[in-house]
Length: 151
Image 1 (cartoon, rainbow, N blue to C red):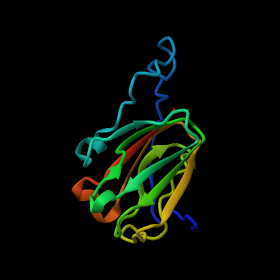
Image 2 (cartoon, rainbow, N blue to C red):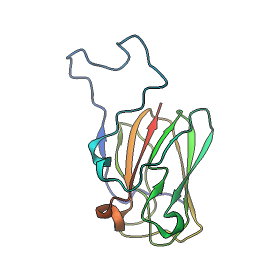
Image 3 (cartoon, rainbow, N blue to C red):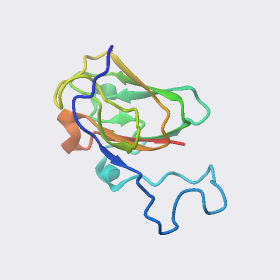
């Protein structure tokens, strides 16, 4: 299944404002420290989290059991991990809300409300480190949102 970006995306991660709080300056990273998820995800349906660092491929269920959620909602992966969005119910899609500069999440084909058939899969390999947020166009207002931290 081909992938086209049908909408523009916001980018985040400019971080270089010169005030000295750039990444990596505080004695290294602590693998147990969870990412700082953006407030966009505050009303996301569900609270499932998965730390899949060390895996080369990860599955995100889209609408499991007919629900309006992505599972997991919060996902941590390494750079170079392939994310497989598996559509377990109809009438959903994946659209990027924000991502780091150079991010690879284009989302599913078509416009904001064009959905993907049940049983289909949308796959993307994320190389650029940072936090990606995404949503289902038809169900964004109900909180069908998710986030991926690429570390």
